[in-house]
Image 1 (cartoon, helix red, strand yellow):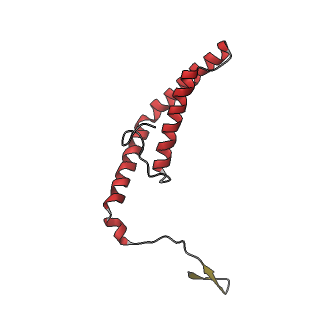
Image 2 (tube, one colour):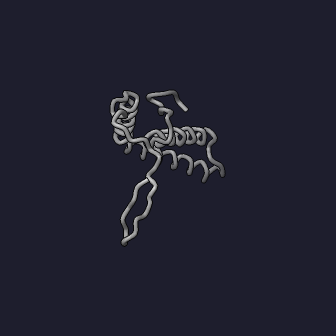
Length: 109
């Protein structure tokens, strides 16, 4: 709990329930996670252009299938679902919403 002075009134502001401690800086698991996250971020930054080209190519192939056959390719759908699940895993890991490591560090989805 913290008291804040505002317009001649003391307000009570609740401070979150986070446990701040300098001992966290000594935890090797935290530093390992930071290293993994940095590695994943650097790999994604390096491959971002290729990921964009892969997405554009996938869209083009699926669009051609749809225009000429009236339906999208089943194998294309399976492939794009795999790509989207993989990318979602990367995003969850980078934003600390999941403890599960993505593919190069862990297993394929």
